Length: 113
Length: 111
Image 1 (cartoon, rainbow over the protein chains, first blue to last red):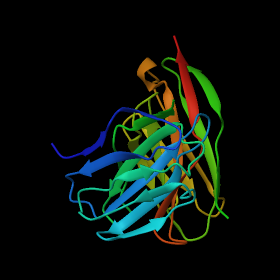
Image 2 (image 1 turned 180 degrees about the vertical axis):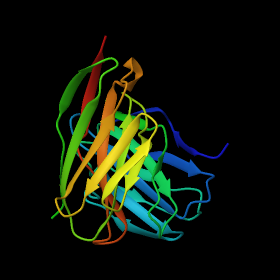
Image 3 (image 1 turned 60 degrees about the vertical axis):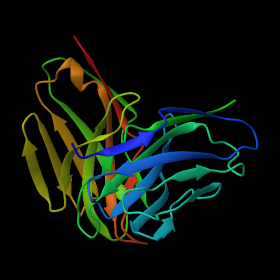
């Protein structure tokens, strides 16, 4: 079955540490996205990529970095510069250039130790 | 700027009908989506509107008025499993293909 796989499900970060969240899709979608979800708030866009080797900052990119070396993969690194990283992180993909819906992964809950 | 407003919480009774409203302000409007999200899980797609009018899909219907910047999601014959958050999202061409989400409406269905 096609879909989006995020790992790990739960992740803990120590102060000053960088952590990387994995996102892999086998839907052959061009576009991939990272959203952050905090309690009582909507999903906020961190980064998105419309094509391999290209990505754009979203609304809250500070303290995060991404790469898009392969069409299937869009990992997100939460750096030590992100002072409030505790949140639920969702990866999504879509067929770019159209009005297609987003397909989401199951999410990663990141907490600070 | 872009802004999406929807009620924070709603409560309804099993078997009843509930309407969840969403108002939005955006430039480069390119469609409105409704997603359902159960606690701790990923959002799943419910409906999509890009032209004015009503789209019906089983127990769920969604309406759009572009001139008013307004949409609603209508859930009929409510079931307990419909207890979830309902996210209104607008796709905008401004600054690239981006989907902006509202904060979501938590729906509680009671027996």
